[in-house]
Length: 488
Image 1 (spheres, rainbow, N blue to C red):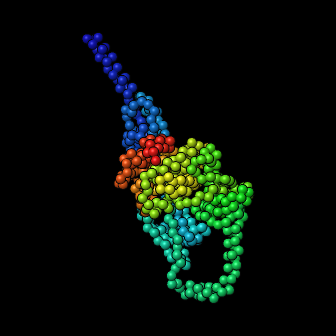
Image 2: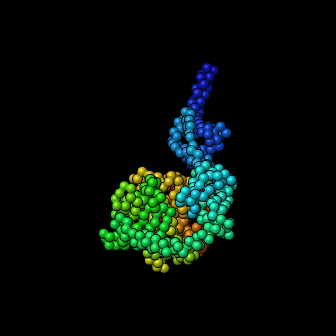
Image 3: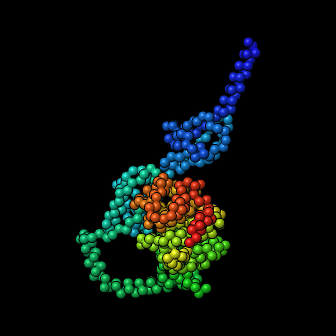
């Protein structure tokens, strides 16, 4: 009987020890963020309670990736080691993402109201940034005497947190007018004859100075285009006697260190690509820096002039592209990206308006990829341009939409959007609200291409557009290999 009792006792201790070895407890606390979802190795294990805490038992021993998410907050990610019989505790702080509205109008010193509350006046350039916008329906109003009042209704969703919503509007002058406006009009009309000649002379002199002006070692001829932060001129290099596209940053950004970094980053990135891959279909940069080598001079880039329509211009004409044309366009862009990626430079704004078709052949087009202004070089310690999201919503990868770190696979996704658009005639995700487009990139399934193309082509596009980066092409070389299999 005694032996039997000892055997049962030892048997009990043995299985108790086994249970104790298997038992483990994970405790996650985030008091300020109740209801957040908790993931271990990308598998959801539950959510935090109303007090912002959660406990999970019997998690196998090992090292796990921990991810805690909630709409309106930046996802928390880290590693957590789980040991049998040990309680693993993690207290985290999640950063609240703020939604901002950028008002971009053509009128300076205009009063801006949001939901009837005065938010401030636009700057000289016509801009005003409104922060801390709560989810819900809102009404924006821009008012200035002598201009038509602009009113716009929009909705901010919880999932839009952390983004900047831009509202662009040009205010037209008011029609009719009051007695004061009529008097002003008569005064202008009467004095017009007096000032007309003076204005004409000033205009002629000013135009000559602007169009034929001197900048650094360049003589400006005329304007090729204007963007949000710079103007591109056709100019002559007095040293090399060649014609260049001279990209000059606008004066209003001279005190913005991030904008200046953007110019320097683009010049350095293009220079590296040109140096190591001179035959890559990427725009050439001849020179970049500050005007007259002054620390306070305007940043500039002297680029080769690209002649031809943009890919966006062709897409806007609703042209039905042949498969060989589309494949060759995607392949050439891929070669440009391959050169950049090999130097750890990621474009982050791969879109049709950044592709110039220099030879518009029906099946063998030639092109150049440009505007690496938001590209990030791994060895340059800067983030995105303004700490927010880079890129254009219809062509942004899911990770760009989330504001997380990008890599080569992000450019592959954007290129996949271009490929899809050339085949289907439209991007996969469209909406008047850019924030909704970004949400669709993150959450919606890519619509099937209805046009009659070979299944192999469609599979390439769908693989480029996988939501999860690990399921996409892992390198641009891998994509080129599949594209080359068509033999076009």
